[in-house]
Length: 219
Image (cartoon, rainbow, N blue to C red; front, side):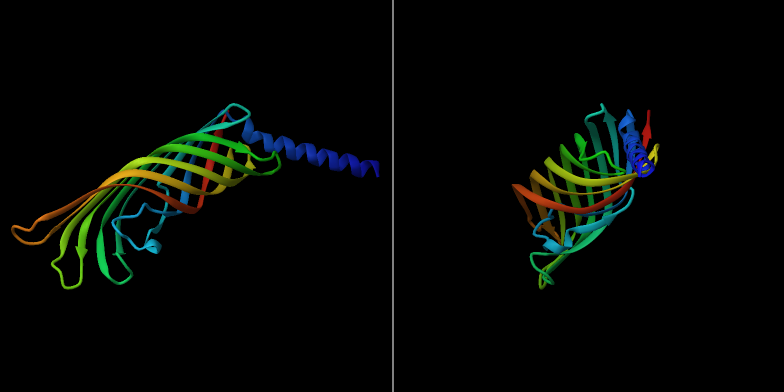
């Protein structure tokens, strides 16, 4: 019985020591290999068309003081996009979207077990731009462009596993609030066609269900 208790105690100590390895790291560098995210709304884009998949477009650096990790995040998206505008099947819009963000915040582990859930909170700046073509039924096609820039507030929940002390695999999810000032513009094809322009300010919640990546730890 005593041997069993000693064995259990030893296993607990080993698990705790292993869990501390990530906490002992002074600097961590990471990349999100896969993201499923909701882009900020473009024009009157149909809601379910805002979700996209991205790979290796988001990076993170963390500085650890033993209690908290202080995070710097950056991501960049540049890809072709096609979506329904105003309503499903109504107006087709296609072109290229460019979206980037820079964020700073903190991260705190919930426990010191072998599997570590964590909470993070980030503040930052985001910019979204779109240039393309709009096609409406019974109307002349038009050149369209859109941009908005503003601040973002992002609480994050995640979990990480460290198979070795120099490496962690993590998955996280967040709900981002984005408040932006923007402008949209459209010009119908043909000579002497007027340009319609509209400025706006808007807040929106963006659900980013999953991001999966790896972090490398340096002491």
